[in-house]
Length: 494
Image: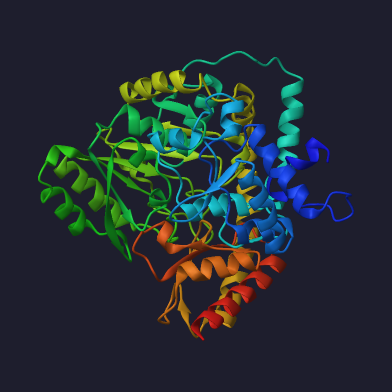
């Protein structure tokens, strides 16, 4: 077999027309994975069932190959289950002391993604998958022509291929200052940091502003529970429940006042406009209450405004940062949701000393966000593309939202409930039947090539919700996917 054919990862299958028997082809494939260093000492092979399914062979064929590899000293079964690449035996002796990368992986301090998040990240790129939970725009909704025009304009002007200053392109920060002012946020270019998306901003804040062991408050449920930026930095997360108007203020006050070490709570993370995953909007009065509570308790606020421009019925109330007169609010924005995730570009607004501190850490991390992406984004804002794009995008998102609501009413009215989102991407669907395992539903849908986001990604104890998105799946995919989802629910209920 050609080596390039045998190292294609999960898409590899033995060739029935090849002169080698299927089990021998599998032996060669796995042995080359090991000898090439892709599967190292201590690596746990996928289960026999998973391997047999992915390779398109029956289990007995796979077992024959695995038994031959075990006899050759390349793999071994272990007490408690599982098949692993050997770290000893003739294979190890022939190659010297083999590195045990599995141990290194376990000892690394950055937390891995939740297993379902890893599955989602892989499944999103499988052919034929219907992505009913994906939190990004469909390719056809992205401003392809506008960026072709921008890139053409950049090709005819002098542009830099060098590093940019620590806070990012001055031209982009000036354009963002004007853009933010239109929504009531007074931010000079010196108070803006360009980042490679909101995740980088979260990472910079977690390592640059917060002492290890301190607590971060956040809404429950929250997108932040599905990632580990704060936990990996040694921070604790404490959820505050929500009601119809947003974050529950009395519970927030209790969380701060009842904390035995009051100095350990210093930050609250919130998505006030078109919340992820619930789609809710914090009311105007609740925003004022939140700022007053922050002032009284001494905590700072991290406002995630990723979805603010994606209003569908009416604009949300003014942001927390627009009301901030004390420099208490850090404000995150991004192009990933409303424009394009591939640009990997966002911004953080805050007091100048904070921005300089985080800019210094960013320079130690990546030495700056792509200069070409920043030049393109500067033209995007300065030349009016953003407003034009939003004017075109909102009606299309509104149509997709209304279609999903109609389909839900048709197929889910008997066993689920939901609210109508006024913007953003998400519908927070609650199943009203019991018992129904959301974990089993997730895997059943995945087997049918339908991808949903279970609610326990956003609240570990949630056993009732899934997050649906109307932003990615096409109308036809949406109808077919929701039909398959409803069938899976009924099957589990039965």
